[in-house]
Amino acid sequence: MKGFRQLLKERQEIINSLVCVGLDPLPEKLPPCLNSGSPDFHLATDIATWMEKIIDATAPYASMFKPQKAHWEAFPNGAWALQKIVKHIKRNYPDIPVFLDCKRGDISRTQQRYQVAQFEIDGVDGMNFSPYMGKECMEYLVNKNYLGRALVGLCYTSNPSARETQDVKLADGRHYWEFMAATILFWAESLGVAENAGLVMAAAFENPKGSGNIFSEHLTRCREIVGDKLWFLIPGVGTQGGYIAETVRAAFAGHGSIAINSSSEINFASSGEDFADAAAEKARQLRDTIRNA
Figure 1 (cartoon, one colour):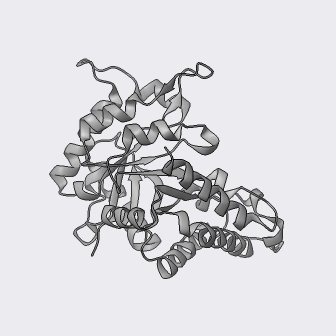
Figure 2 (cartoon, rainbow, N blue to C red):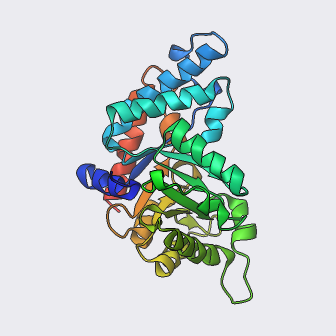
Figure 3 (cartoon, rainbow, N blue to C red):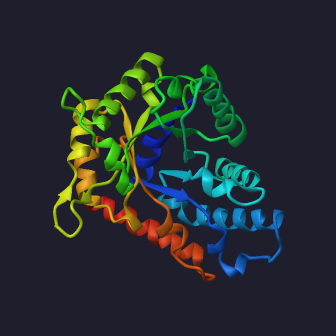
């Protein structure tokens, strides 16, 4: 059975796209043409239908799909709806890996329960985790039956306040995020899962805002630390304003080495009856921008 990174590599080679399509529904953004007006279970059905249509429309440009767990937990029967759209992808697009953005990080027994919840119940091909509580955050997501699943550690994230903690200098002169990049690679190798392991690494960004200075050194530095041993899941483009060309130049190390995520710009491209076509156009534009980087 092929592992996550092999699936990602092959998919990117076939369609020549590094796009990761995020699937982050908000009930208040549900296009009126899909709103049945019924509560609870019918809302979940409406949202699943919405996301399935976006999946179908963007599949030609998607190297992977990435539902964000909290967006599915925050409405009634959302867990059912998430599992429904994962099954839809598996049934119709078996060559496109599904990655769950859930950022789990807890003690051993709890982490093992997350492993069951995400891989057995939700049925996804990979997930991310918070490494703050130590090696067991990764170790207890490993299962011999799921060695091909992607385990991706948070490292250098795109939210502004991340710099308050991730850029802290350690006694040896490294930033905390540099220490975590090296540590996650060490964990992955010692656990025998490095082949499909990765890091969440923010896209290049303007620093400081309004300066015209595009900062991508974190990506270059991370490649120096981990080489091409780990792949990068890259948020921060689209509505967050990340810079694509600089991101690709700093992080790309061949197909299967990076996936660039966009969620809101694609999911909420239109609230009209053309919502699926509008989503496809946003995904196509992102693919083309990356190709031209």
